[in-house]
Length: 183
Image (cartoon, rainbow, N blue to C red; front, side, top):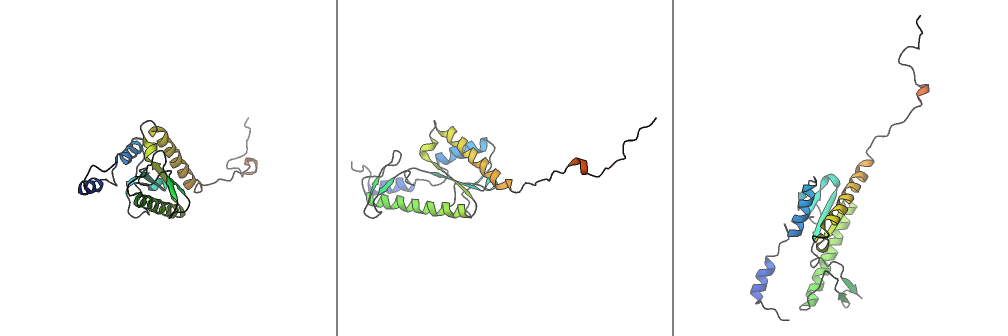
């Protein structure tokens, strides 16, 4: 099927695709805020500029669109000469296919590098995909995020807890007098 838009119209449409405050990101942010989680947005000092940064939990949340980040696409063979299989939620366009494959694979490589840098620095990385944030799956997905946040919080701060040594009470010195019977 040929494109019904002129190149100028297509350019204008594509230039208006946002990278911040997308509907998906707003859904995730609203759920987190309503459940008492506080966060920062698009922190430039954190590698990869995650969509949501939760410093208290040392967690970076990326809300990825299935198409732009190539969710579950399979490269068969080597990158240059292999073919790419579409997934259920990510369909690569048939027109200018080589450009789109290279773009999506570069995005995936950059994402993996950023995730690795964050993990090496002690951060937990949570990646949420567009297909996981549909209305019927949103609550389950966000509950899984909540469990991951709590688990990370406990792992981060459990080694800072003080341990107390229990001592046998019979061998402790007396702080008061012996029991004296009065007549």
